[in-house]
Image (cartoon, rainbow, N blue to C red):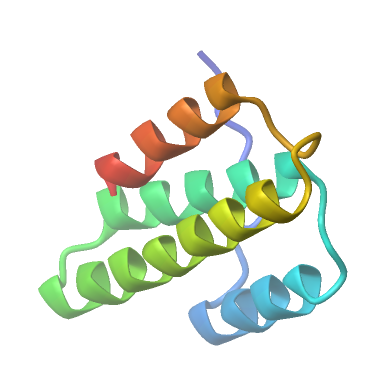
Length: 92
């Protein structure tokens, strides 16, 4: 399996700014998955408990945004997409 990480070289604060910027524009479903996947990979690479805590906190925020978007727009994602997104979030 090949993992392509678009955001690997972006430092933490720039990554957070990117997330906030994208979420202000009603991003597509795939972008939510991309951000969660990047957070999951950063947790795997992290050796610091403090960093892992930050990643988990932002992961929960992204999950809340995903839920809100699903409630506002039922065609945004299916229940299968939600379950897959929840599984990724729980891994973080």
